[in-house]
Image 1 (cartoon, rainbow, N blue to C red):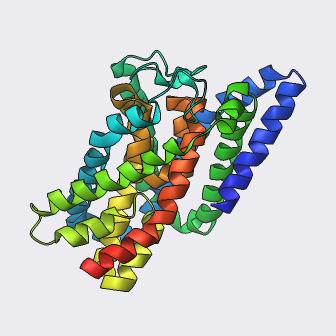
Image 2 (cartoon, rainbow, N blue to C red):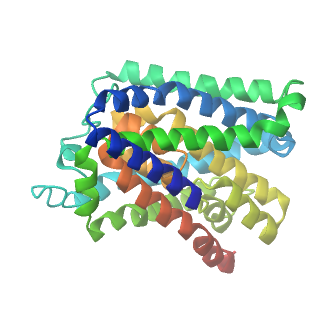
Length: 327
């Protein structure tokens, strides 16, 4: 998380320098690279998981359960997203009163200023989401092929490099936009309502879907759902506590949540608004989902996304510990 914030901060500083020097055109040019680099990032995520035998071996029989638990957690969070918006934007009349620029509260389809996806109809948003998923699936296909033997040693380095480039680009866009810094200065504690409601919605949804899954108890479903998109940390905690079966389930559940939030980001924002994307992305909003938030929800929401992601990432081990006492 520290390196993520460093990359973002360097980008903000660079964007601020460009704005002070009157080089807004350079900042806009850098910002346009966000979409192709995001496609590359999704391909790398797919390749990384396709070349992981633990994921691919268990993908068959656990994938349905994982998908159902992940979707239940997502739907539970989405149900509370309108409440989060109301509470955070309760007094939007004062500029930046909630840490998000007032333009961000102009309704479900206000997707952020200077954004190519802002005026997209639902069909175009779906098209953008399908292209993102296509990049991810292509990565899985190549990662599970014989080509992975040559590239696997470099996947980790490429993943981190592309991620930090994406975060740097987002930072440049933030630094070049004066309204973002005003939002940061005027942030209020109300922004912490968002992660609290994401946790409540996720646990509520995962507990309910477990009633339909004979092989998973409600407490176990809440345990894997409490990863909130942090599939590495969640799978490690569940493996240590309950063995490899639940560890792999936790990996798949939270991987599905992360991929859905990135791959369907344009459609989620179009249908449920920016707060819907914050709810679906959960802990990922502070890291790998930040570029998609900047692109689809607008730069106004980047600061709120970072806070949401940081709080939820810190909450993962705490939630897991509490739920472990119930199991």
